[in-house]
Length: 309
Image (tube, rainbow, N blue to C red):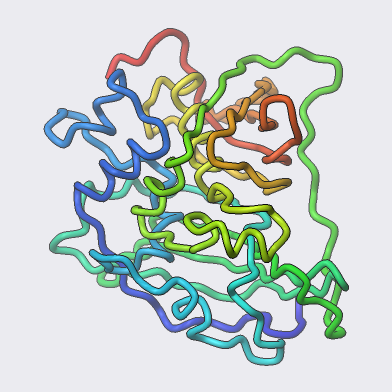
């Protein structure tokens, strides 16, 4: 597919992480003491939670906080307007896993290679920028994960670009009870913990940006809900074994406020592939309110009973 900005490759970004970083990530998305393989670096099966690569395009090699707005605006996309990164929210995220990450990048050289898949003009509501990001070992060339994400630039449409293709929908089966349901309770400080992973967007820490965007104040990171749901599904269906999840995706439907409880309903679709990975569809709602994650789909190797990790 061709169009404004399509195929543009950003300069590769060096990324790194320490064991401390992956411990923090696991804790911030809800890992429990029943999952010491994610929370204790001396556990014999200590592992990085599989969705951790989604944070690396924010973190780079940083060990301290950074100016989120300056970084997001650093590289313009040829052929499209210069969008205001102070008014951007997540649209949809997909990630697939090829190799487990080492618990630390020390002694290795990793980079994120990103390119534009599409830039779409949605009129008055805004514009969508769709990007592919691969986490690559620079020396060996091995690809560890591939992610596709879209950013929605609020109120920044109407520039004459293509509207973009209709995305597929993965709805849960109608009139069928979920296979599993669970809830995730946030606190007023949950976003302040999650942002320490490297996503320092002020929208999630300071009430003012959220007020200007019509949210009434600070909102949770969409990727907090996204990652926390991935964790819960792997915990409830995959025995908390990182080898038991192949891919994960969801669309960001509405914001979550700090302190909200979100409820995950998931359905096994019963169509396992040759490696035992089964399609799981899910919907996430704010308790008593709107859907916050829609179009949820994961491929999980479902295990029975508690984890033996």
